[in-house]
Amino acid sequence: MLTTFTGLLDKLIVYNDYNRVLLFSGEDGFDFYDDRQKQFSQTCRLLQVENKTDIDINEVAISTKTSLRNMNTDALWTYNTNNCTSLLRGRESIFIRVADQTQFEKILSMNADKIPSTLNFECRIEYSTLADQRITYTYEIEICNDRRIEVKKDGIEGVTDLSQKVVVVPTTFRNLQDSISGIDRSAYSWEKMGQASMRGFMSQYSSQLTEQNHTLSNQADADITS
Image 1 (spheres, rainbow, N blue to C red):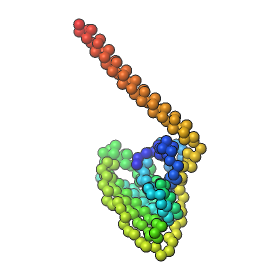
Image 2: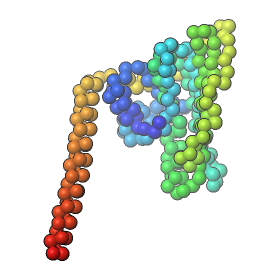
Image 3: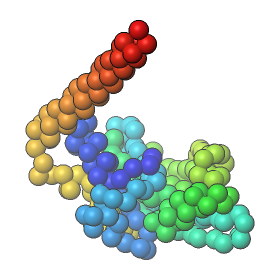
Image 4: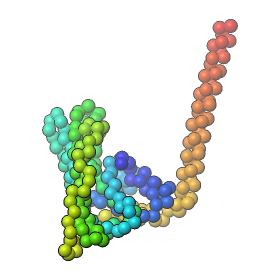
């Protein structure tokens, strides 16, 4: 998912989604989100981890490794994250940046200069189930020149029976719902619908005006010819 966080928050409001949405980060902290200007202006490539069932999962540990390589100079930029949460309820989500801001800007720069690049991203997820099992899931992709995506791994890597409860230390996160808790969702959605209708009207009006001008121009050419 390629989006700004403002766009992500907008989606939660318009879709009337009240489920908890957690944002994790690496050692670089949350300045990219807590700074309102960066939250609005910076575009991020995000990975969404979603519990699509109605069943809670526990002791969730997620680690990611991202490496961006300049294929001409072999220069390498890396970004790693390691996060845990004790509980991910049914229908709740976690978002993690696939690349930090430095990598994202390097990608744009290499694209502009037509320099070949390769981005490797690996995500490892471990969680406990109600059946006293520990599931390990791995997702790995390779993105060449910010265009061609190849999935290297996408599936369960291992299942282990648990003899005792796994203990994880929850890490700092941001709940995106906290950022929109004071917003009147109904009024906001109606405003968005009005803006969309106005854009549609203006687009239709512009199209009709262009067609009318084209017709008048053809008529004027015909008059001159005759």
